[in-house]
Length: 77
Image 1: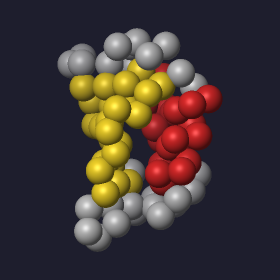
Image 2: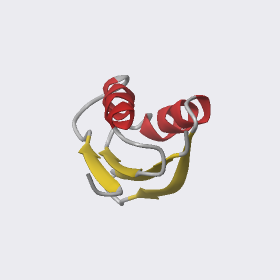
Image 3: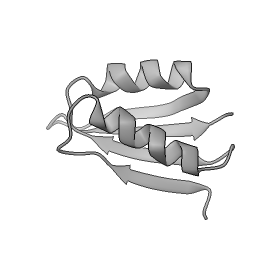
């Protein structure tokens, strides 16, 4: 497994993007990075809350003009 993995959660709405992120991160090792793409308007707030509660760090959030988010999440523990 590489140090970076990706998850496409576009087209899914709360709580699915966070649920799928949780499942994927549980499969990954500490020190790996997950890039999540989501277009749910509440995704930014939901991901920030999830990461603060589960020992992950959001290293970067990008939002495109069409409202698509790309989260770079580091699994710290």
